[in-house]
Length: 184
Ligand SMILES: [Zn+2]
Image (cartoon, rainbow, N blue to C red; front, side, top):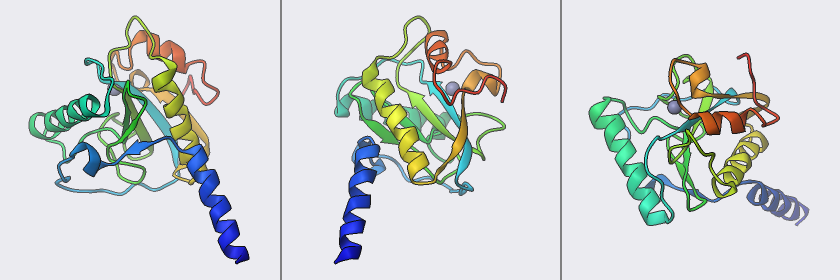
């Protein structure tokens, strides 16, 4: 009985810390062509934007995520959608490769990071709290569940390779985060 109470308390805190995550099956993911597992907890979180249109419902965000997966698999030739997770304008987190699989999003960091993509283009304006809050929750959730190191470093894609990603406005925003690392 005591064990059950403790377990319930743990579950309650886990649910409180994690944002809503739309599973691969819920957004209609294709299966990956191959899987490589990460060594968790990882030391890095890499932030991206999709440099695409935005979405405001689970249906429209799922359609965009399916499109990214198609492009990554059919055009880029990758085994799956590149990102670990995505966030949409509907406030949902979308499961990409998830917590424990190596992604394809930032050269040099794919094997030691979680890659999170903000759906939309954030060059001149930053994403709203509707997108930012679930991402902060997601990173906390990853720390709580030991997928992400407590002392992890969050960086922008442009710190890994020459790219404008995650857009000037979103890059400015993540520089205010307590876990941002200016010199990875
Ligand atoms: Zn990127």
